[in-house]
Image (tube, chains in turn blue, yellow):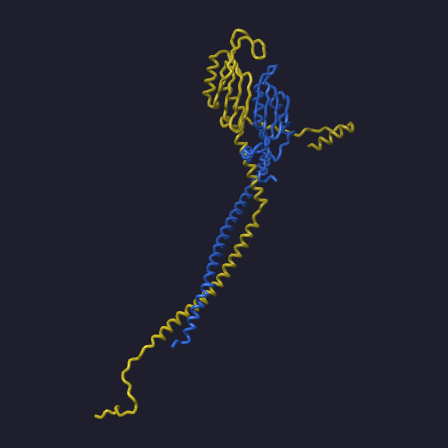
Amino acid sequence: MIPKGLFTQIGMLILSVVIIVTYVQPAFTKIGIVQDNIKNYIEERQKVESVNVKLTDLLNRISNVSNTDRSKLLRYLPDSVDEIAVQRDLVIVSNEAGVKYKDVNFVGVEEIKNNRDLEASANLPRAYTFSLSVEGSYEQIKNLFLLMEQNNYPLEVQGLGIKKSKEGFLMAEIQLATYSYKEPISNIK
Amino acid sequence: MVDLSSNSFIPKRGPAKRVRNTGSRQVYVFSIISYILMFATLLASGSVLLYGKYVDKQLNSEVVALNTEINSFSEAGMQEVLEFDKRLGQAYGRLNNSVSIVSMFDALEDATIDTVRIASLDLTREKDEKFVLDVSVETDSFDSTIFQRGVYQNNKVIDSVEISAVQSAKVEDKSGTSVSSGTPLIMFRAQIEIPLSSVPYVENSNQVKPITIVPPKIEQKTTSTEGSEADVVSNEENI
């Protein structure tokens, strides 16, 4: 004779197995997934946190740059170049050097022509080119270059032609370049 | 002695072995297992339910923390840093490639012998790599030409030199002007390459003579016409 309790016990056993299979085990799996997600979120939060800390640090460093240095940097590499002001400066420098100023012209702004140039010039500032014609002795022309080198913004000699004039002086045709800050290509809208 | 027990009406029971009910003991063990399993399952279900809620809550708090951290990121700050870095990089690039034309002239002077005269000079800067000089040179003899070539070749600043178009003229130069007779004139072109790294600009505190550029003064004319007044106004606007 089979006791009545046996059926109950078998039922309990089956129920337990069913609960384990249908609830406990999937719930465990779900908890595992959630824990993985928590781990990922913690990692991502730490990354964002480190970026924020780094950014704050960099902003502090920028704010610690003195106004003098900041204005020097803006003078050396301004947002845009005033062509007339540069021409005026070239005339003043020429007079200071003692050479006879003949002519000064703004030639143009450097343009990017192809993709290769685009890649190469990604980190280059925008170039403004000028031509300057002067006449003087060799020492005076050297002095002109010396003063140009000491200028507080770049006056880069790209080309130079020197020949003797009829009066016995030297005639110098100088191609110069100065620069302005060029925004990164990704920022140009 | 009389055996009283044999006369008793109570039936005697012999020494019988007790039969073990093995079936009911198996059911008992089974019931323990089933009860334990049942309770364990219920306990596990409850624990899993509670722990699941706990990890869900933890996940939500992490999501909120991440969103807070993302929201605290300053796009404008990043833009400022990137722009400053880019400007510094571009300025550093130009500063790093700044050269001294005066140093180049000094090097050229050192490398030019006494019997040689430079008639004309064309200089081209090839990107941030080198200067290419096309120099028209006059000298008095072929020996001087050969010696000059050797001096250029041995100069440390000059990377390479190529002598070409060697011409010998006795009486007239290119422009047709007569030159002093007697000494033969040798003309040649020297193409000289000077790397920018050979003539870097080095700031010398003794050389620095800063020029102060002041804005031009505008004198207002007391007896001005309408036109001149307009000029003054436009000048002031420009300043």
